[in-house]
Length: 264
Image (tube, one colour):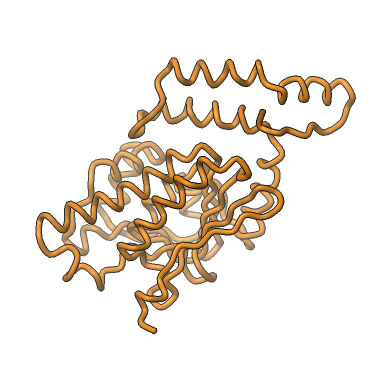
């Protein structure tokens, strides 16, 4: 079986409502093939609408890499003409936008290498946790390829102007806790998968409608593609106050117990 044939994006949802999405291309450090970009976009759309899912955790296959970038071995055949480049880039943008637009909280569990397109996926997530041996870089300048406005905008939201300029204009590698110090990740930890899953478990116990309204507000503020309007955000907030979960939360507080939210 060839390397590209083994490339896949898979998902498993446990009984806590935590969907783990695994980006797998082990022969190439989980580099994203065109098919993987397309699968990721479709899968994130599906998980966004799945009422059984409370939280999504994105990870790479194994410990060596989250995503080492786009699979450059495909470029000669899939990005060799202006039309092919435009189509490929549209698929990448669709995948990253789907991650960012997901109605559920999305956590990136980043182990090892996170380069290029891997950074694009990571900064599309709501929360980012990394291993102590993580390495981040956007080496576009070393490859001569163009880095699109939406990708630059995502980085700018996280790092601001000076941080984005240094990351992109130097193409250097940020290692370990340096990635946390510049704001690329929220924390660097010894066991990133255990940490990310523990965070996902805690989030999964919170009120889904409240979390959805918060995500909508953040998307509106950041003016992401297809962001909800201010009116839609207000309606989502109003749904929280009209929900059974709001009544459950008040009752649980009065009874000094943990609430059991249903997302209704």
